[in-house]
Image 1: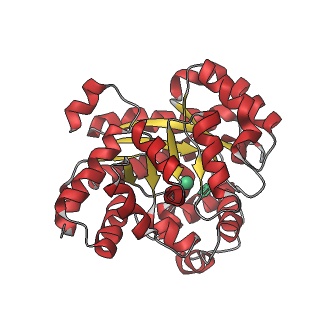
Image 2: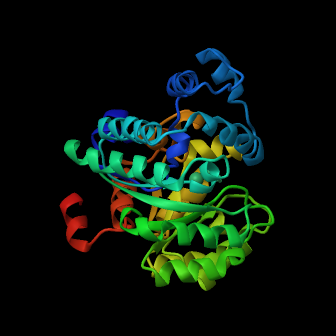
Image 3: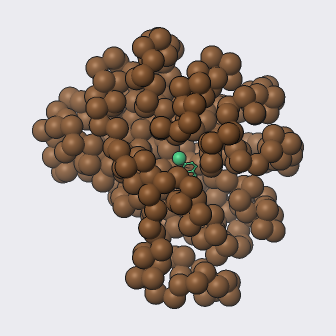
Length: 325
Ligand code: ES4
Ligand code: ZN
């Protein structure tokens, strides 16, 4: 069995983390006070008591309003740099980080404040040897038109953004809703991934659209792909990464998906362990590794394989991969 000490010391890549999901109660309260934003809570205990969810919808209902405390470029910088220091402590050497510009622009924050603040933190993290990059997500419950406008607005900033993702409420918002925008993103040179949240309505159809039609390079969550052996073969053959988030699944879907992950490891699928929204789901990357290791009695070899998978499915050159593996 791999111990917590072993997990802590292992070099890892983080591939599924929402920067807005790293907003800890302390920083949330400090920014609320600084910016004069009423969040309805005034103590850490009150904020923690509001983290009370049992579904994706109930989580998102707490998550988006909390973002009101983020107002200036420096706020975004501070949020991301605080996370990146934590990542460094946990031996994360490489990170691809989601952010949701539309969640900020719809409340009057300029795109450039968001991207410049987050990007500056990624640059500064190089000083402590974390190589971090940004993945810009479309909110899938907003229109395809809104996503297309976001791609336009992002054009002058494209050098600061590595890839495109898709998140928020999946119900009635299938991958094909964004077929054209994903095509445009690829044509512009972005890498592409998207969420396929577990146990959503039409989950397997969504995974199939994402893989066969949109042709994503990774799939975020997506572990219930085990229901369909043909799709498992597809991701194994094409070495498509699945970014699994145990603590998130346990809280939002009441199921850590431990058996599914064992099955994927056995099928040589490049599944990795990640944090999703660590300030909300009770732990950062090493807590996620530990939770799944304990649940599945993972051996050292299996844990090493999961960490290797994180680098192998990162959007870096083979040369850079060899420096980590
Ligand atoms: C998310 Cl758990 C989850 N699902 C979908 N979208 C998200 N954005 C942040 N966390
Ligand atoms: Zn996510």
